[in-house]
Amino acid sequence: MAAIIQFSAIYALPSFFRDINLLLIILVFTLFFYDFRSALGVAIIGGFCLDVLSFNFFGFYLISFFLTLIFTEWILKSWLTNRSLYSFWLLILLATLANNIIVRFFSYFSADGQITFFMFRRSFWLILAGQIAWSEIFALLMFSAASAVTRRFQPFFLEKK
Amino acid sequence: MVKIKTNSPIVIFLVVAILLIFLHAVGLLSPLENFLSTLTKPLSVHLYGWSSSLNSSYNANQDVEALQGQINRLTKEVSALTVANSGYLETAAENQKLRSTLKFLSVNNFQAVVAGIIAKQSPADDTGDLIINRGRLDGLRPGLGVVSEEGVIIGKVISVKDTSATVCLTTNSNCQLPATIQNELKTQGITVGDLGLTIKMSYIPQGEKISIGDMIITSGLGGNIPRGLLIGKVAQVYNASNEVWQSATIEPLLNFDNLTIVSVIIP
Image 1 (cartoon, chains in turn blue, brown):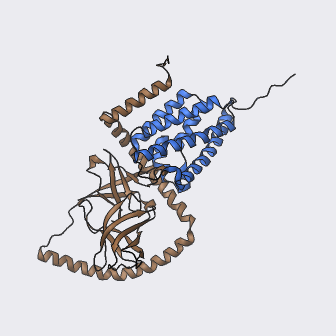
Image 2: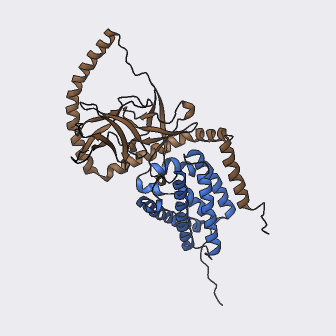
Image 3: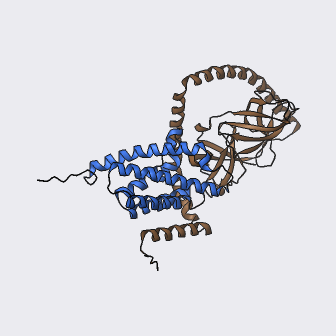
């Protein structure tokens, strides 16, 4: 469902809203709030659906989601020590950055270098900034929603009696 | 020695992903892909339509003043065209009678496949190409012309799958169309999209006279797109005397963001 919304609805929205990467947000959310195994499930189902619907080479989204997930899992395991909103923000920021770079690398090499290298294009940085902004807003909303339904992510303090 | 856990989720993912890619490459996944595309088409068409109307109303609110100016200009233009049209209708009727009399059959004998737009390519692609819900199974092939409901050419098919196809818009830099200017000399050239906003026609010899407002139509060269489909009108002409060629900026006649239904012409 998220793949269809991303494919048909989001890309047709006014330019600023087109930068929402719903599947990536769901992927990082699943990794952060559930586990790596569930996130891999999201990556394979979402990636497969987008690969079927889109006109990129088959495997484009499967591989890009997989690589993004591996990187995000590594950040989560190696760098982040707690599951706070700040951790989620940082994680989603790095995941968005990694995903954009991976996707643009694939696009660049599948076009046989006939397009300008993405790092030198203004549009790359603008889309990236837009995606990061949207991802952080969604992260805040999702974290608030998750905190409202479970005490797992609320801070706790040990008091000495 | 590195020991690989066969039940590791990463290994399972990789095996599934490689299997899917392999099955896709050999074509065994086609029934499932076609089923999935067909299943999601109605929802995709609705979602795209909803987003497209949202986009239109958002853009309309963005520049009301510009729209007001455009309405005034278009109102004047419509009045002038109505007068001109009455004359053309007379001519068309007379022409029709003459054709019948002379048994001169020159009806365009091409078929059209009506398609709904189901998506736009992602912003990361930088193309703005459209994806339509008709494909190879409907007789589509790369190179065919795509027209709007009004009959204005909006682009051409660039790639096809069994049940869907990608259409590049005339304003996209990856979209080239053989074209003719409706001037005295019927100047021919190639149009190419410019930054997703306008269309450019280059390599026009200096001797050719082009005026602002001249209509640009498809030339029919190449055989895939019939002659006479309207592309746009000349908005600006660049003809520096020290240049070998002159070029023109062409204004499209439609806002492509509002499109939801198109027709693919099969000559």
